[in-house]
Structure formats: structure tokens, C-alpha cells
Image (cartoon, rainbow, N blue to C red):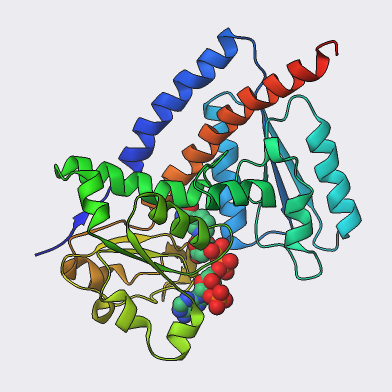
Length: 307
Ligand code: NAP
């Protein structure tokens, strides 16, 4: 029997309608909103993500400020760009597109974002709040993975709390922006959580962990990493990976980290790539931008108050 395919596009459409209503509400209250992205150089994944965000912002009529910097940019120049966006009243949220070239410090760059505009929660203050279970912003990719899970649980009539309390969530990949937030959100749901990285593959223990998963969240950036032998028949698989793969026809397609054709027939439910986590992530980022618009307006207002 083939798995249920969790439709990320349908989920994103529903979420987009509620975000559009929130943006309309901001307009009625005359509160400014704007999204800024900063890209240094660009990769297959970051260029595609930037294009999607540009389209979505236009669609939702949200002012969009893209900053494209050459791959040779210095840390000081990058920091200056972020300082300019921090100070811009029309910019509510700032997204730094990863990866940065190796001569730039990701930690220093993330720390230079104003925490109120840090819609991906990469600043240490926001990452700390997330780890403590009291997030200011929930990073969009991990949030989307759980939003898809929650929506699917609702659709099959399973109680969310009951499901998470008796589940083992295995997260493959532990980057600061995807894997670690996915672990934190699993803890918040009182699930058992296991986090694994490349060492599991190097030591040949990947399957030993993944086969026990009730929920398998895969964010490694390795096309086809998870195959049929890595899953059990009741697993729900969330494939976060976005990778280019050039077929025999010379055309490049987007594929996930999960070998969908062999895994889908073996598991209970699975997200596709494309059309799974990606579309929900985009809308979630705009949702965080709305929250940031409110927070920044309140911040500006309080700074104008006479002391
Ligand atoms: P990243 O920063 O490169 O981190 C990858 C993580 O995966 C690292 O922790 C790494 O382990 C681990 N890993 C690498 N190879 C592995 C292997 N063979 N077995 C087990 N673990 C392995 O990547 P990222 O930013 O988290 O992104 C991961 C993937 O998600 C990429 O394909 C990216 O394009 C995609 N992505 C998708 C969305 C979306 O909306 N769908 C959003 C963001 C990212 P070490 O720590 O040991 O190096």
C-alpha cells in the first residue's frame, strides 16, 4: 500500500489566506510591513528560495527589499548592509539567505540582525528563547514541518497531543537553522526526540536510528539519503531537503533527501519534493514578517514616547 502524500501546496494555500487577512488588518491599522533578504553570491537553493519569496511578497502586496551582494563582499560590508536594514523603518523582517561563503562568519552575521527583525530566529537571543520553549519567532522551515504534521494528523482524525506523546521523532541533520529548531519543536510537543548528523552515515548507524522513527524529519541536503531500508511501515516522513539533480535528459530537477519512489510505498505518510515543506516555509516566513511588523511598530512607538 502506498503512503498518503501530504500536500504542502494545499496547506500553503490555506495558510496564505490567513496571512493575507492579517496583512489586510495591518493596512487598516496603518502599520508598515516589509521583508528584506540578503544574499551573498547564490546557490541553486538560495536563488530558488529568493525568487519564490519575491513572487509571494508581490502576491501579498508586501514591500520587498532584496540585497544581492557579490561573493567577495567583506564581513564589514555585509554588517553595514544589515545595519542599514536594521534602521530602515519600512523593513520589518530580515532574512539572511544561506549558505554564506566560507570567509564570512555566520555567527557574527546573525548577531548583527536586530532581534526584533530576526524572523528566522538565528540571533542568539531568539535562538535562546526558542530553546527555552518561549519563542519570539519560530523558524519557518521547522515550523512548516510541524504545521504539515499537525494538519495531516487533523485530516486523519488523530489527536495531536496523544500522537506526539507516544512518538519518537528522529531529526536527520542538526543545522542551527533547520535541524536544531526541529528538535526544539519536538521537545515542545513532549515527544521523544533524537538528533543525528553525518556521523551516523559515516559510522553506518543511520538506519538503526531512522528505522525506529514514528516521525522522520530529514534535513541533510543529501539527495536520496533515506531509502526504503531506512524506514518502518508506520513512519510519517517529512522531507525538508532541496537539491538539484540533473537527469539523463540534461534537465535539472529539484529532489529531496528522501528517495521518494522507494520510500513512499513503505511508510504511512510522506511529503513530496517539490510541493511539500517548501511552499509552507515561504508562507510561514511572511507570517513571521507580519508578527515582526507588529513588534517593530510597537517598538518604534515606545521609543517616541516622552520619557
Ligand atoms: P546544512 O546547514 O548543510 O546542514 C546539514 C546537516 O545535515 C548537518 O547537520 C550535517 O551533519 C547533516 N548531514 C549531512 N550529511 C549527512 C548524512 N549523510 N547523514 C546524516 N546527516 C547528514 O543544511 P540545512 O540548511 O540544514 O539544509 C538541509 C537541507 O534542507 C538542504 O537540502 C536545504 O536546501 C534544505 N532546506 C529546505 C528548506 C525548505 O523550505 N524546504 C529550507 C531550508 C533548507 P554535520 O553537522 O555532521 O555536518
